[in-house]
Amino acid sequence: MNKLFVALIVSLGLFSCQPEGRVFSENQELSPQVEWLKKDVLEFKVPIEDNSSAYNMSLTFRFATGYQYRTANVKVTETSPSGNEVVKEYELTVIKSNGEYIGDGSLDIWDSEHLVESDKKYEETGTYTYKIEQNMPVDPLNYAMELGLILDKAK
Image 1 (cartoon, helix red, strand yellow):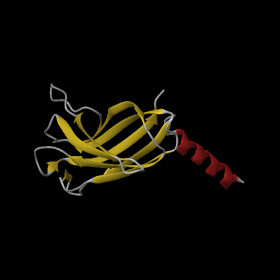
Image 2 (tube, one colour):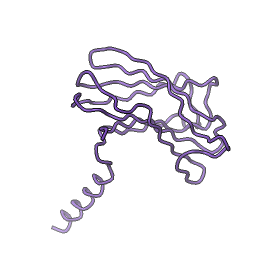
Image 3 (tube, helix red, strand yellow):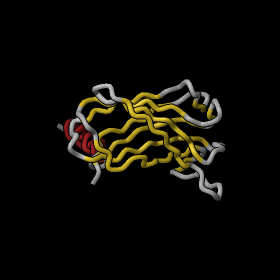
Image 4 (cartoon, one colour):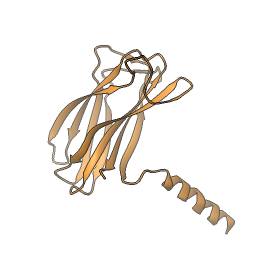
């Protein structure tokens, strides 16, 4: 009985960490060499069950101290369940004009979250595929560690 109670408490703790309205959240590591090569395209499969709601889409970027660019530029290719493609480019600002990093820092690692599209509507239900690649003038993009995609129902 005690084990069941402990399992219930742990389960509640895990589920309560998820923000209300969160539909999808996934992070993917980049290279172990702490760099992002142009050829390294990340792929996220996002299930959309409700196309009557609006969503807020954010990208997360984890980087290490030493990242030298004001932004991390990315190209995002969205493919709908029926195969329609939409390509968008985003600038994720990670350094303020005064040179300070933006985001939550822990030792030499920084996590930033960037709302890239608000009140996004999906035309169809099913699984959408997002392919994300770095779109910077350099290759590799040094001090880049991880990128993530978050989808929340808009309030």
